[in-house]
Image (cartoon, rainbow, N blue to C red):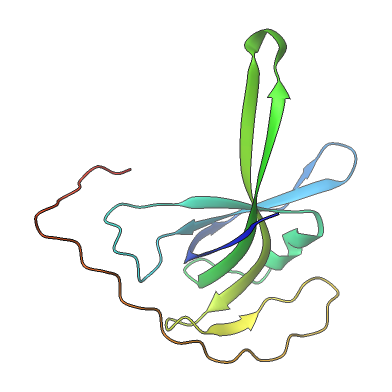
Length: 141
């Protein structure tokens, strides 16, 4: 399974939802553009934390800068006469609160895990490459 990282600003943290009778739970978080983004249009992205990982969002608040470690999950559903449909989830596995310079404030601990050791400061992210003044893209996708 490939793992990915996404850095952005928390726009919303949803409530934990119980799905079905088997005890499955999930919780969504919406992350917007990062402070270093040169994107001219909003780009909110929804990540879903499942089962025990829902508690990782307990101390996350709106407007915090975070780094989400996630996996891309896909599944197929045969809808009979409606045809086959495909679904994609961005499944959150870990979340870190970041300082404006990109260093970790402190990783949010896994449920039942011992506290993490302090993280060494990472170099500040490089400034975004400038866009040529000849090319103006005003399409929001």
